[in-house]
Amino acid sequence: MSFPHWFQPLRRASLIAVAVLLAASVAIAQPALAQDQSRATGYSSSQAGLSASGLQLSEFSLSGSPAPGASASGGGSGEGQYGGGGGEKHSYLHNWAFEAGGGFNAPVGNDTGDAGDPVPVITWGGNFTVGAGLRFSNRISALLEYQFMGDKLPGAFIAEYAADDVTAGNAHINSITGSPVIDLFPKKSNGVYLVGGFGYYHKSTNLQTPELVLSYFGEYYENVTVASFTSNQWGGNAGLGIYHRLGGGMYGSDSGHTEIFAEARYTFIHTPAVTQTNGLGTTELIPVTLGVRF
Image (cartoon, rainbow, N blue to C red; front, top):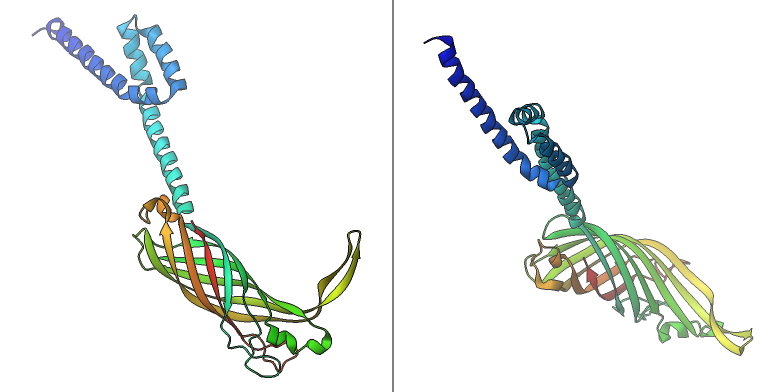
C-alpha cells in the first residue's frame, strides 16, 4: 500500500483520538469548574472564543488540559484539606471539656474546737465551681477545677470566743485540684459517674464582731473581722454524680457532650492541728454541686 493511501486514515484516527481525549478532559474539568466560580468564568470565556475552530480548541485543550486537571485535583485536594482541617479543629474542640456549677456544703461534724471538744468548726454554706480539661475517651476525662466554699461558723464554736466580743464568723476555702471523671455509662443519656480530686486548699477562718458604722444613711452595725486563722494545705475529695445529657444524643455526638449534673463529694483538708497558732483541726465537709458540663 502506498504512503498516500494509509496516511489519510491514520490522520483521521489521530484526529478522532484527540477529539475523544478532548471530550474526556472537558467532562472531567466540568465539576471543578462548577465548584470554582471565578475559574469557571475564565474558562467559559476562553472556550467560547475558541468554539469556532475545532483545531484551535484542540490545541487549547492539549496545551491547557494539565491546568484544568491540576486545578480539579488541586481543588479536590484543597477541599479535602479544608474539610480535614475543619475536622481536625472540630476534633480538638471535641476533646475539651468545661464545667460550671454551684451548690451547698454540708458539714461532716468530725472537726474539733479550740478546747479539743468535738465541736464542729464549720457548718452549712455554699460553693461555686468552674473547671476545664480534656476528654481522653468516652469514659474518662480529667479536669482542672477551681472551687470556692464559703461556710458559717457554728454557734458553739463562736461561743468559745464570747469573751472577745466575737458574735459571728465564717470560713472561706479556695482550692485548685486535678479531678478525673469516670463515666460508668458513656453511651446513655442518663448515667452515673465517679469523680475525685487532689490538690491545693487555702482555708481562712474569720472571727467577727459588730462595729458601729456612720454613713450618710445613718448609723448601723456591721460585722468586721477581728481575728483570722489561715492555712495552705493539700487535700482531696471523692464522690459520685448523676447526669442527664441534653438532646439525648450518644456520647460521640456534639449534642451528647452537653449535660447537666448533680454530684456530692466527701472533702478532706489536712488543716493544722488545734495545737498550732493557725490551726483549728482537720476540715471535713460534703459539697453538693449542681451544674452543666460540655
